[in-house]
Length: 175
Image 1 (cartoon, rainbow, N blue to C red):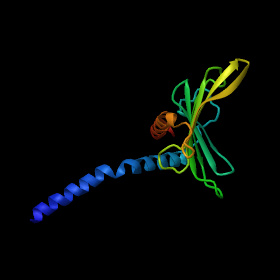
Image 2 (image 1 turned 45 degrees about the vertical axis):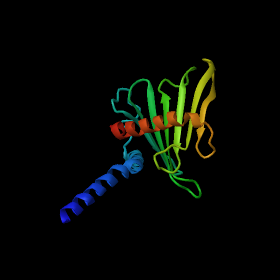
Image 3 (image 1 turned 90 degrees about the vertical axis):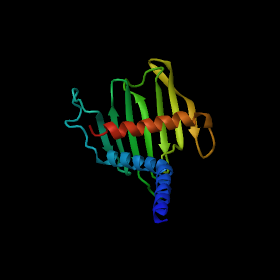
Image 4 (image 1 turned 60 degrees about the vertical axis):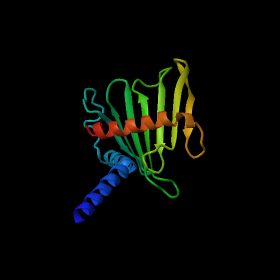
């Protein structure tokens, strides 16, 4: 009988281990990215044209926000903003995905916000630049806000962008 009890207890522990950490791991990854953003160093010397580091810049704002941007190739830049809680403002992580070339008509700019650091996005937006090349105009083509239920059809797209941004940061931020 004690052997059967041990096997049953082990089966319960394994079953709990398989179901419990799915959302907890995401929270841990979000916190690891925030720690990376706060801990990485600015590439030195600054503004070196031939710097091969993935991390482009790191900036600490006077209001407690920390921004780190990295570039994997010549097309996309990922920026991570950890905004510290001040007063009634929630602590949040914002991830931006933007083209490296700058303001060019036809380019898409994305950002997602995780307001409670639980690994699920709360706000997402996509802006497309339209108009003439000498005077581009930003037009919001998609918007998602979880609390109001706006843009629920875009939730999966923004969650995918957020998850990809977390993985990119864990792999390349600080290199």
